[in-house]
Image (cartoon, rainbow, N blue to C red; front, side):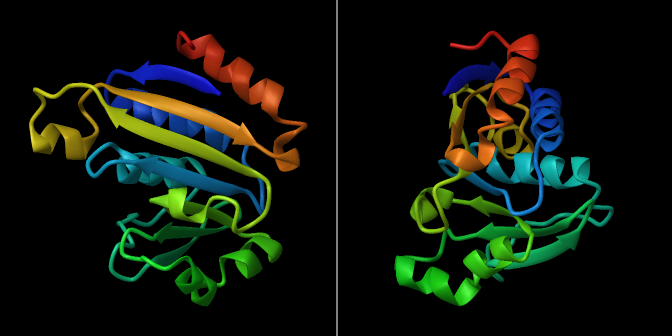
Amino acid sequence: MLRFVLENSKDTRLLAETLANHLVSSDLVILTGELGAGKTVFARSLLSCLGVQEQVTSPTFVLVKSYQGRMPIEHVDIYRVDDPEELDILCIGELLDDGHLVVIEWGEKAIGMFGPSYLQVTFERIDTEASLEEEMAGDAKRFVTVEIVGPGFTGRRTQIEADIGKIWRVA
């Protein structure tokens, strides 16, 4: 587990770029953190780094938005999903099996449901003096924790950790 500070939205973009370089088809990326902590800002940056040309918007009300980048990508937001069984109707497991990269906001609700391997990125607000606009734009400092879980990342874990460690002081 890697924990470090993102200073601003440029750092958020840099983290997205760093992780995007290591993601492949059928990967699951789980984003966690409180409201306004930076999940959607990160997701937009990640999808852009993965070659998505269109504007990425939060799928809060539609639950799933599909994009095409260097692979098929599903951007999922399960904030409004209360019952884990409701996730079955989203067919996330099937999408992963079909080679889609799946990025889930509020993904703590889905941990362990779609296999043993995932990359979890958790955002925590630090700057309590920042305005809501700064928070929502990703322009406030935040702690981030990157956790690489499962055998699907075995061959990539060391390089991901090294690449992050080259940029940020990791605890």
